[in-house]
Amino acid sequence: MPSLQRVQKPTTRKGKKILLAKEPKVFEDVKKKLFLTGRKASEVLRNCSKDLYKLSKPHAVILSRKNDILPFENIVPVENLCRNNDASLFFFSTTNKKRPNSLTIGRLFDGRLLDMVEFCINDYKSFDQFTASIPAETKPCLVFSGELWEQSQELAKVKSLLVDVFRGEVIDAVRLQGLEHVIMFTATNDNILMRSYQIQLKKSSTKLPRVELEDLGPHIDMVLKRTKFASEDLMKRACRTPQEAKSKPKKNVSKDALGTTHGRIHMGKQKVGTIQTRKMKGLKKTAAEKRVARKSKKAN
Amino acid sequence: MDILEDILQKEAKKSEKYKTTDVEKNVELELDLGNLLALDTNDLNLQELKSHKEKYLLNLARDNTQLLLNKLWDLPSERREDIVVAKLPAGTLRLPREKPCPKPKPLTKWQEYALEKGIKKKKKTNAVWDDIVQKWIPRFGYKKAELERQKDWVLEVPGNADPMEDQFAKKAEKKKEKVSKNEFQRLRNIAKAKKIKVPKEGLPSVANPSSDLLNTAAKVARVSTASLGKFQPKLPKEKTLKENVIAPKRVKRDHSKISSIDEKSSHLKIIDSILGKKPKLDIEKAVNRQVFQEQHE
Picture 1: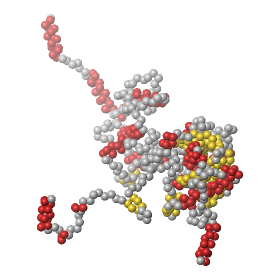
Picture 2 (picture 1 turned 180 degrees about the vertical axis):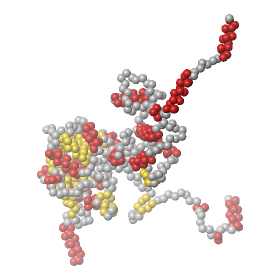
Picture 3 (picture 1 turned 90 degrees about the vertical axis):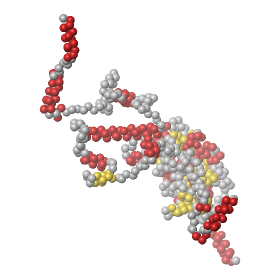
Picture 4 (picture 1 turned 90 degrees about the horizontal axis):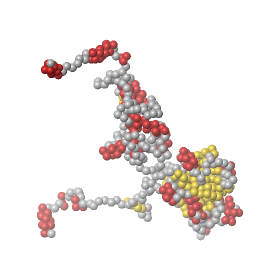
């Protein structure tokens, strides 16, 4: 097992494995989410947290107690809670007269705050209000509709955060019949609408399936309120990929139009004159011929 | 001609039965297939959004999902464990990591030395054959410790050692020293890796030391003399703590174990040496003094 740079050694093997799992890796696992409540909770926010928790199980933790935290004033208590639970995404829900039903979604890098966005939930429809269902841990397709996602700088960063939250596991191959979930985010001038549907693939006249959608839930209408984004260089540092993760292009291998793979091997210079070949006595030079060759060489 | 018309009619019927998989959009979607992500920058129909919100959103989602899945169906597929999967390309959207990139750990003092000398690790067996007990015993662990305790019911006193020495205590002390040496070396390696400068003697200096730290520092300083702090005067309010005191072990001679004959002889020896002391007589000096006295009489 690799060693830990810790003064206090873990006493059990299981404890050591847990600590090693928390070390930085080349290819990272799914980001763990932390759901917590502020000074006052509300029915809407409680249902919202529960539903989003169900979507993210088992990579999520709900903290049931109320905390006297204000993220936009002091983020340190949230950072500490996330560090204890090994989470890098948090959903902080509070409600007060000034900001009713406010859900703050944020992400951390290296235990410190990276981005934070506050949404005010106007309308919420839970899973229970719809009949459709999907199996647990399905990777969703994400759709962002509206030109504002690209035009507005702020919304572009919000989009990056939302993708990070709902993306799930990073995969290299997908079973096409298993694409059952799609989440759509629509950005209008006033608000952001989140809709979640179950994909049903129907037969069509071509080999491509006809897509039909059914309401799955949760459906959230939210308004973007306060934001706190990371500085450019912090974001740059957070997006850095290690050398081992970068895919190196394979050189000297090519595929032609017919699909056959061609490879090029580089060999050194061959000494054609001294290659060991089969000896044919009849082709050997006689003594006379050798004398002639020597004479001609001398003349040159 | 009739056959051709029939076929064409059949095809037309077929395509009527099924709904189309084509979607028309003014601006093409920006797709990131690696993340199953689609970005639709077409204008939203705000009127419909206001009047028939849910219906409009459902249709919009359906159209965009259709386009996304159409592209996904075009991807090359392969077979993995009896399941046909489509190979996704790498995602284009750059998302931040949750932890910084892992840095290569610096080599420890031993690892550097081994690399330099070309020493390679030898694979050791899990169990070792023990002849005395005639069993396979693990190389380390509680089973080995149990066996060692059984084997050590008696310990030989080596030829040149003091017969009064406690061999068991000596063995335990040696083990303790080994363990603490190993711990010291481990901490030294960690300090080297984290580039923390540790002074050769004493404790490292801290900006605001706590009372525990100061007490430890005082203890360490007291014991850092040649006689291990035995003759060090106490500071006015210093408390001598019995535990964790680094002091030399006093060899207690058990006087009850010496025989009476030996005791008597050793005591008599001491008395003889005191009482049997005769003054040293310098004959030459005495003679010279006598001669001087006789000369001056």
